[in-house]
Length: 301
Length: 301
Image 1 (cartoon, each protein chain N blue to C red):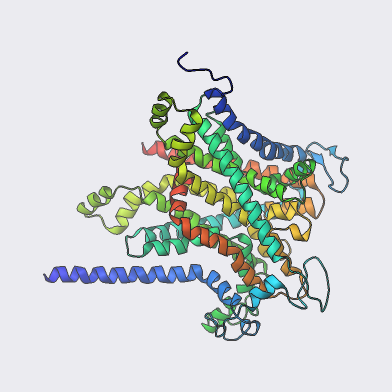
Image 2: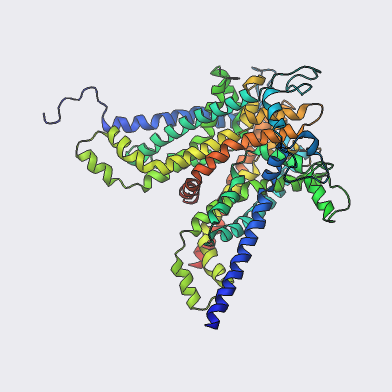
């Protein structure tokens, strides 16, 4: 036997299987099972204070949702919140990425500083926002007033419109760096020859951006916009920590609606049904989005 | 000659304009953090001064001292009203808890995902094609959806109000993306090197440790950073899973400061700085890898 005896050794294939088992177990126990359970809960009436008395109610939780004006209000507000955040993030993210792509001395310092907000904990931003946007003693109102831009204090967090504006600002501030990171990574892979060729052809800066940069960025932007839409639509902490959904219910989104139904109203079934609606909406949204872009590509060809 | 000078001049103006734009943008984006830092370093009397000072007239560590050692008449989290006592402050235990759960969950998540990704890219068995995509799907699911069923899982395991529940909870939300990232990374590492070593008679484990792991380091670092940020910043899990005041993490603990008689902004900003500091240090050390890693993971996907 040239190979020698190896009774205690695992075979190569066994090692391969052994490597993937911890991942599968963890995923199933702490992710797959809870998600499946969340879907199941949507069809039950569950009061967390009376465990063991769950009753199957079929689609009742969903009927409850669709009859609830607050559900639709939350849906509408979530949409407004998501669309305005994503629009601002994408525009700002692409512009800043282009700015940070310019080869200048010391640009990496600026890069670091502009990417930093992405890693700042949401709790920290919420604390800082509450302090800066405080109507009486906050720096924002003070500055606006001393520059003569406003006459009287703006109640940033306690009037419905301004509360929405504040949460959008928080979200845009925190997540624009994500767009920058992705766009910047892609920009660095665009071959410079493309630009040189266009320069020879006499294309101006704007033309070069529209004809070369933007088509190259299309793929990244699709991915980024889908990811960001999915996450923003379902965001809980950003809004909850800043306004708790208030004043009143004016900054509720579906995540907060679901949380409040489960915790405050003790209707865990309704909360779970909301979660199912969130999953369905986002799944459909991303499928649709990919379809639209597939069609556009095929037409071009 | 004249033309050369002119273009040189235009070039300088262009550069100056770019730097100016960068400076203004960076100032506005970094302002919230600067303002928090500035507030936290002021004595209480200066915090409310008009006009407010961005650079403090007097520096003081007063806010940090009361954060760590406590101070008379300060609000005690969890106790409604307790005048004229010197309450114990929980800040340091919260800080330690945050560090423990962040490191614990990150180590587990990165190890498990690295092993699994290696197995999925190097061995052939049923499911190896769709597991990574399934995993990415898991990453899209927001934690608000399965937090309550996950809480029940933890309760069944007897882990509620135990830091292990947070460690495992964070593993459940970071594992899918770490897995996706490592999978994308391993696919890019040529298999020939390992095959050569295997044919030469090296064992699979030795090949994995000595050849594959060093090549995968950039991916591992990116997964490490991602996982650290998510775990350190989380609010929801700690809010639902923990119920005794000493066992909270920083994010949930600090939000308790808002429940007092009056809001102590200096204390608040000091804790904001303390919560951001560890991430800031990490960020400075590994900034380059962050961009590279997200390029590999988020953009290729």
